[in-house]
Length: 355
Image (cartoon, rainbow, N blue to C red; front, side):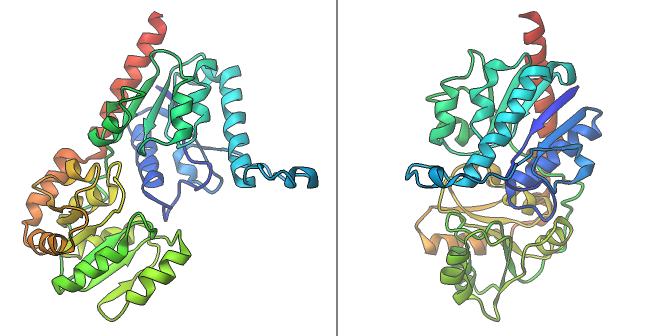
């Protein structure tokens, strides 16, 4: 099929990935292309050319002095993103059906949803977050029968008041995230931001008597300097923002992976990546992590219970790595995800032709 895949205009789809959404988008685009689909990925400048990228242009926006004086003026980055998605949707409305059979909106922006009725081809929107106001308001403008997916059952349930998403869990490339030997210590991966709460992982690993490696981009410098860096030491090190090959090696060399969100994780891609390496997960039972980890991939602790989290670290650390890997291959593979999206693409295009 000819697929238009719409990604983030803020972060490029390239390694090292800015976050789980960018990593997921790369896996989806590459997997669809491997299965013979013609994919055009609309994404930020700097995205990997091998993914068939057409850039979401972000033209420089310089407001006038009069516009800057408006106390209600939105941030300039917001305006640039707005114009990038507006330009894309106008182009798709004019000529999209000549080039594509389906549009898959994998961004967090509201305009693709709000303007879906202007397209002469079906649009599928994946919901990657709990409900947010801009997307809720856009769904109110979406045509009847608009197609939504959600990355976990928990995420689908959270949107049930405005949409009826089909659950398509995210997936990881289990041919790239391969089994590792394990080791003596723990690892935490992800964006270093308050809602991911790596400081909780540091405290839990120390209490469990395990050295810890942190890896990921620093998206909140103040949080890093206030809550993370003072906790570093000989037994807790920050390895930096790693590409996938180095992450696979580091995660596979860990005894246990900690996932410690202070929000309801829509899915929990870092947990799936760890389990694909055979590394069991000790996680807080928030959002989609409950379904992703289950009982075979690790141990879950109730939020707000530091002692329970320490117990989950100790219990997860002794789980058989082969069992953990098998759980990931069965439930978290990219192939499983892509086959589900292919069925949805076929359903929506067949329905559009019939209509």
